Image 1 (cartoon, rainbow, N blue to C red):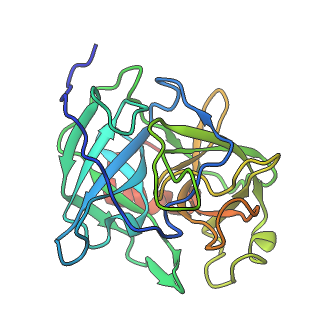
Image 2: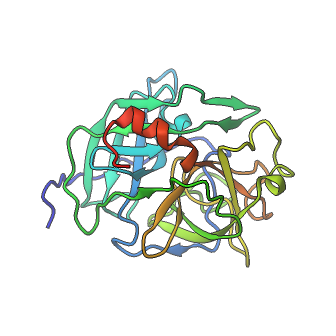
Length: 263
């Protein structure tokens, strides 16, 4: 049973195509409660900045905070936060409105690609966790997760054509590659120690999820290892890696800004 539920028909979301919204190829549909930390953010802006809301992903990291990408929050006025549902337009989920954001001070873009691309959304009240809504632990070690299987989830793009979100949450397993390999696709200014790259195999896309969404090392105790930053401008069917902010590099910053995460 929901303890705090707002039943709202979520807004339809429109946006322009970019490398931020990345495609889901040969993913699987998530089951209800499979990714209880998954958030969807419907971002709104002043009309002169963006006439329509657009959708980003996020990860619930405590009972009061969402971790997402800085570029999702830049110039935004508010975020409608959706939790506890695998439906894009959820008819029954926990929804709250926030206008309290923190963007990393060193966030920057270079030729459309980003560095230090992390941000935080503060929720208006403390959540009560249940089966469908739970926080995920942050990766805190120096482990690079090289060659490990990871999971990325989101509603993302389902084609390389006009933007079309999946009606249900999708996920796929990727494999972490070295930054040395990743830089061959991108360039050294953006593939740095605070990034982590992953790529699909067996026809699965490495361009997965939504901007700001989670990259997770799954297992008995799942760990949030990355935040979706960007994919290749060439599209997703060609096997290019996706780039994520490496969460372990930002733990101190996150805890400094939230003041609430347990070490």
